[in-house]
Length: 157
Image 1 (cartoon, one colour):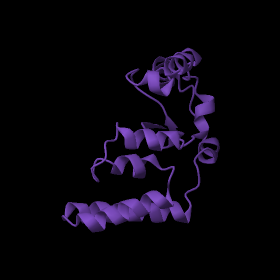
Image 2: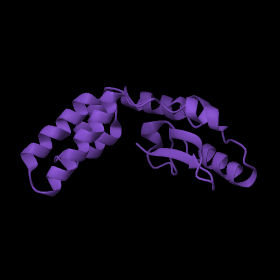
Image 3: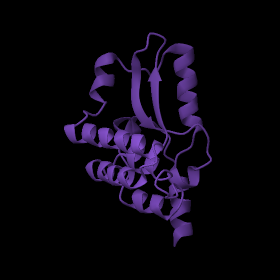
Image 4: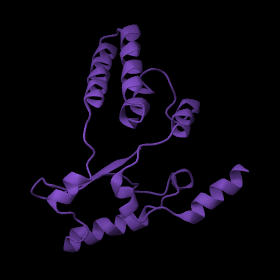
């Protein structure tokens, strides 16, 4: 899942992570169009409009729990083991990371190709059915397209 941050020329986060897309390649699945978001970025680049003040940007960034930090450490250890050919040990740590952070797509989906799962196959759709992470900015970013959602629902039935 693409995650986008806005960082200004001073290195300050002006908009924390948000799930948005630069193309409409997966619009039928995500029900989001890229153009409204791309126009927001253009407007920000031209005028600064759309940036959040430091306090609001900080408020919209989720706190990282100790469990999430441990999941990240487990994934890092798994990657290290994988690079050294210790596949059985790596797999155990990838699985443990996923158990600790079931909604963390960086950990769950990002690990799929490493453990032999298809990140666009059945394993991904199982993960997606369990729910995707919610980002606070999604409600403030007008990219959801109800027509795409209706078309997807219609074709599924």
